Length: 224
Image (cartoon, rainbow, N blue to C red; front, top):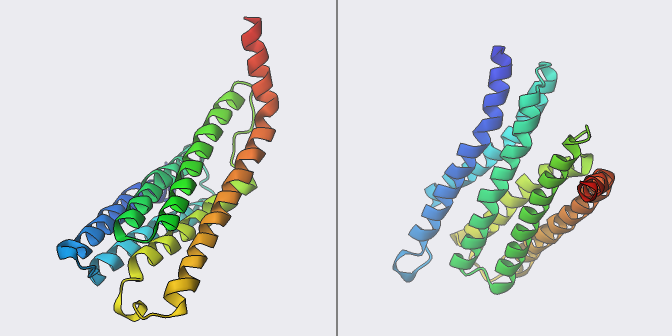
């Protein structure tokens, strides 16, 4: 394997430690902020956490761009990239649910995040199953364009949600104004709703595409 291919694969796999780094700093920041009963966020911890999520998201952009530019697209990369995306979801969204609940963002916000998290996990589990069935019959199990769009938007979406949960407590945002009390939380709920709709449509699209293979597998099982 060439050095360029190794670098691209390293970028792909770096998504996991970086999102765990974000989770560690985000949890640390929230626990530290709530210490003593007063919400006093640490700017340093918040920035370090944000940097971890930003870099984790950028690896999804860089690895694909570099792989195509350097002509080092590989089967390993095609398999590893969606797996690393799933790890991102498995870590990021449950931590965001905890963060929302712990920081007092409100019941509506926490329930919205919880619903989005469950939908993400169900969709990815179902699509993994469909791809497994498809491989039995030589189907092209590559990511569909809608799946790629969903993935590309999930990273900045998660970042925007975290920015609201964390930075709304900092001094400049504490004022009693429409930005903090109405516009910002409304934008977060809109992002969550948009990602939920996109995820559901993606689930339906994959199901329709793989339905012929699923029917063949069911008919084969009945005939055994």
